[in-house]
Image 1 (cartoon, one colour):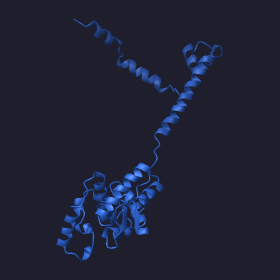
Image 2: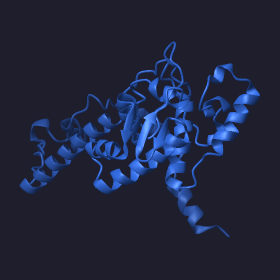
Image 3: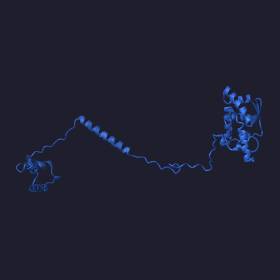
Image 4: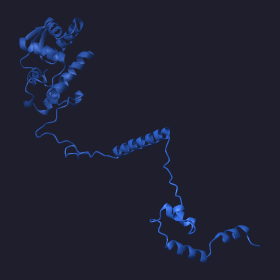
Length: 260
């Protein structure tokens, strides 16, 4: 039994004779040189004179004002989009990093620059020589310096605030730095006068901007500390500078920048 759909499809296909006839017609037909008038004349046949054939010219379709506005808007959007796209793809070439700034490398230190000494946080890290209160540490043996350390640490006050100043004094001097501001203000006064009273220390603190209560409290701590570490001898409320004090010599020899 024949499939109807297959029969229809086969009947619609041109045979070889039809294809040969079509090829013969197309050989003599030049599409590029053929005008609309030629097509009309060809369709009219030889029985109709060429002068009687009227070729209607199709006028260009005019767009309404609103259509023109939409078209103009679409063209404008297209131009803006093109500009944005072209600017977005532009890339700025970054300069290559210099040798000193290249990622993963360290900037070399200037020639002769020395690493700044750090103040030890733990007084146990301070060398024995810095605990010598009298005499020349350089002339002492290691055992003598170790003994001086033990003797000096035994003098550490029990009062917390004074004990903090005690440790700060040795840790700072071991790094060649100035200890607390309270210590430096009082020592500069003592070093310039040779002796001072607690009232002198209070006055110096108040002149530096401290209040009355803080000035008196700090004065009492400093009077105790200076006598303990051998910077001065104490008689009542008066301190006298000791000329053989190693600590006083270290404070006196601090650089101006460290003693500020």
